[in-house]
Length: 401
Image 1 (cartoon, one colour):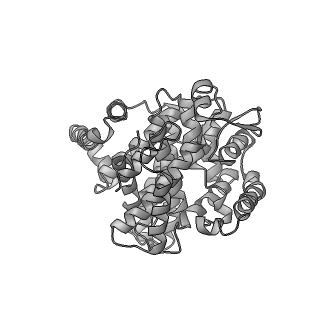
Image 2 (cartoon, one colour):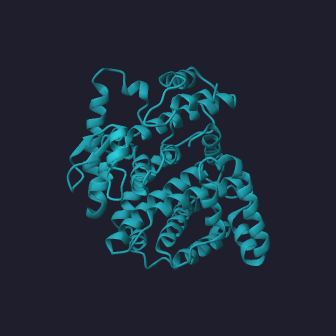
Image 3 (spheres, one colour):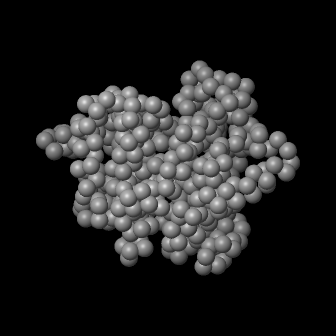
């Protein structure tokens, strides 16, 4: 179940700076890095599935959450130092993980996740577990992409040793087809380069705000909020959770080529919202689809099409859809082979993310009429007691009063 405390704890990742002992040409934060990591995990995982590998997507989603929560708790200890503690002082490393669990026991006690978190930290999957290799590869390559972007403005003596360490780390994953093509700068690399543009697009760019959030980081934040809302739905099947999570992660994909258009501008005229949507779909087809592979393009387009509607696909190509109520999805399509997406939950998470982006800046002392109006407009959509798709969204907002 999503609570104010969970939402704000996750939001802290926007304030965790990365590479802060090097020259940085732009802001680098943990939420953006984790977002690119999950985009990469999806791409690399799809290549492995196409080769006949069995990918445990539910494990990947949960592991990515636990990685981020651990990072938030230990952000003051650099990753190389953590690795040294793990290799040279294993008993202390175990105590450190116990401390991490302790930071979240009260926060996650009603979500059913605390034991899964503990199991992830203390009963690690073997190194040859494919899903673990996919996620670790995505982690390493997303770090390498950050390094490639900042290395051009740093003197060689500052970064040469980092480059060698990154190359050594990623070498063990070179059997993964997706990584091979990324390094060779083929289709997935070109696709990633366009998605990376979302990292440079600042949300609410018409007003000062702290912390600043990018469209890419916002997308992962929406996916994580969707995850917690979905976990509050009793007995939600992992396949439905997978659909919800990745639909949320990619819900702003067209903005990689159209750029972020703020809601007031989108709604400036009666016909503009539908026109913007049509343009986004046209650009998606012309600029992004040619860079996707046949074995995941239909699914990805299904995720991004009509992204805020509860729906199922009624054909094998996922092109024809049928809108359903939450109750119909919950009773008839909550199963292993489902194509059901709770788009309404994604919309709730998208609004919650925008609300928190505005609310936190106001609370931190950087305010404007745009932020106040945006925050109040969203809150007014969900009065106390309002329930949508099984989630008490009105009660969520009353926690911020």
